[in-house]
Length: 216
Image 1 (tube, rainbow, N blue to C red):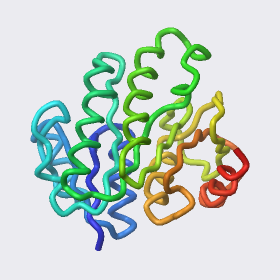
Image 2 (cartoon, rainbow, N blue to C red):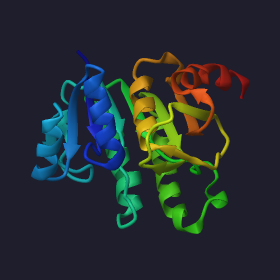
Image 3 (tube, helix red, strand yellow):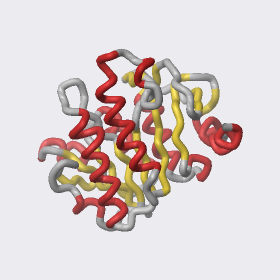
Image 4 (cartoon, rainbow, N blue to C red):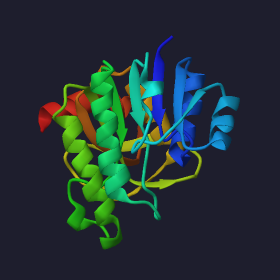
């Protein structure tokens, strides 16, 4: 049984990732901020670790086979502290601890922030800084850039693209399923891609990524 460390385990997307990992038979270490959050993810079968990417968090990384980073500053947070520096600290610690696989939930628009609303630019710029560090690292990484996140039921069908900014929405449930699938799909390795709602079954779309990369 592989152990997956989930940063942002109690967030809107993180909770779904934890649930899907447990359902898929993984052991989950979840990074949360409070004891109440720890109790919530303990109830679904994950092992919580209380901490913060800008503080102490590395205990849960011990023995982890992979990391899924689903943190986000949110509307009231500091994107530079969370989306950039916090994520970079997690990347660096993952390398130090010998974790080989790293999946980052980022955002559509990081490659072209000027095409996005001004309100989003600080978040997109911070996320892009973290993306660059991950891309230049030794980690076997996947960067998932979802469109606008919704809490609607999953459709199981998406549109993916590499190197292009897509405008659209996507269910958090579909993003969570993509993150979990990426752990076992070699086509997603060393790959960054945009993903919104579409017509292609999710797993099929992810399996086509390597072909899409070759065409870039």
